[in-house]
Image (cartoon, rainbow, N blue to C red; front, side, top):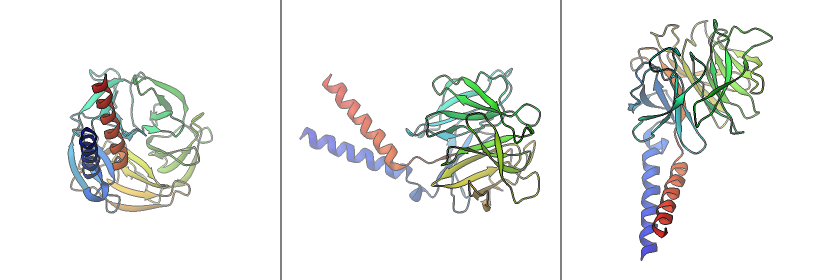
Length: 289
């Protein structure tokens, strides 16, 4: 009977996780954070429609990333001299309440682009047209950031990468505001090449944004109408190798400020089910102890 009760609990936990986070049921496949307010949204990759989910309560969230184990992370941007300097957070997937991991130790941090590589290394970007655009690695236990190198294309360091994702060939794909193009960035030394200029007029990327790649298909968001460098305030689909880009839809009417500061995948129901199984196993071990 005890075994049957445990099985019923397990089935309940798995079904609860699947019901709560199945993208098809909720109508969205991505998570997004508003740079100005810290509000969280679900984003549909079919039409860019937004579903309000809650809020982190923090401003200046410049990145979102879902780790392989299903943990949501992000970090705030800004001046190192601020009372609350740029900091890495672990974000609760149920309440979106952030828990501080630690400050990023590079002084002022701009942009975002938190990316988990298949090797286990976590990358981010900083800087821009004035400050040298740097590729960083992040210690996810402390928030400590280490410089890999300056992002440059044939020696040209005039770049501002405000979104990034991991490509299947081991390269990073970056969304560059300055050249209005997609870059392929070498994670070993930060050297980069242009994949393709974006098929829009200059200026549409803007100062903030987010990016993910799902099963070989990329998605990126551009900054809002009231950002310090305005963008088209939209979601785009793109090919990570050719750079071919298609408009998915606009965020106008809902996102009215600086724009979406980061995109992340919605956790797969199976991932959360495994977490539930792990939690049940932990309870069993504690009881036996």
